[in-house]
Every structure is written in C-alpha cells, then in structure tokens.
Amino acid sequence: MDVAIVPYSRETVDDAVLGWFWNEMEKDGLHKTVFYSGYVKSAYDFVAFIKTQAVAVFVVDKDSKVPMAMGWLTDPGDKRAFAHFCVLKEHWDKSEQCGKMGLDYWLNKLGLNIVLGMIPTRNKHAISFVERIGMKIVGEIPMIAPIDGVYEPAILCYATKEEL
Image (cartoon, rainbow, N blue to C red; front, side):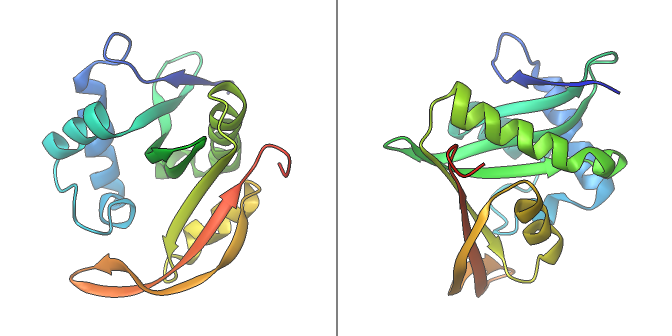
C-alpha cells in the first residue's frame, strides 16, 4: 500500500470526511485519548476545530484515497507549532510512516523550525510513537495535562529538521 500526504483545505476535503474521521476515532476508542482535555467532544466540535484552529494533513492510501491517519498543528508561533497525530487502529502497522510523513511535511514543506508535542505521561503508546518517528523527549512537566478534571504530568517533546 502506497501512502500520500493530503493537506487539508475546505476546497479539497469535505466536512463529511472530517466527520467520518471523528467517527472512526470514536469506534477505535481514540477520541478521548487524542482530545484528553475534553475540549473536542463530538464530530461537530472536531469539524469546527479543524476548520478554525488547526493546520491539518491527512495521510491517505493512494489507491482508495481513504484516510489512514491525520495530523494537525495548533498554537502556531514564530516558525513553531504543537503537533498532534491520530493513526486509525486499522493502520497502526503504518503509524511510523504516517508520523514521519507528517513531520517531514511540517518541517520541510511548511518551513517550521521546530514541532513540539505534549503527551500525558500515562499515554505510553503515544510516547513510544513520537520516539519512533524521531521526536526527542525533553522531560516531564507536572500537573499540566487536564484529564477528567485532574491535572496530570505530561512529557514535552520536539523535532527539528536538522535532527530528523
């Protein structure tokens, strides 16, 4: 299976695809892990969030055009932003490829100097994922990740094009 990056735009990706991706995240039980703060709770919230607050990309199967994964940037600043990833369970065997393609797109095509990440310490799967795609762990910050109203520790990580 060959994969490709498809940058999100309102012209190229229909709202129905965003809604579908949310529904797939829900089926896989990933929505509460990805949106651990509870800020995004529904397909409607997700569509609005991606359309107004994020710079998103899809990783798709080139043949079927079906999204396998999605990544988005938030809190952009001076040549930096926070990265977020979700690879649907059916495609976890391609998760590293999807993640590396997302980082490459953001750092080389969008021209960011650094991509940051913050992951609740309890999410060992996501921490392992970011390490496998080349992100570096800086350390743990206490009481920063709001999960079910309780602030838990999270790790901070980053990637630069020079280090990938």
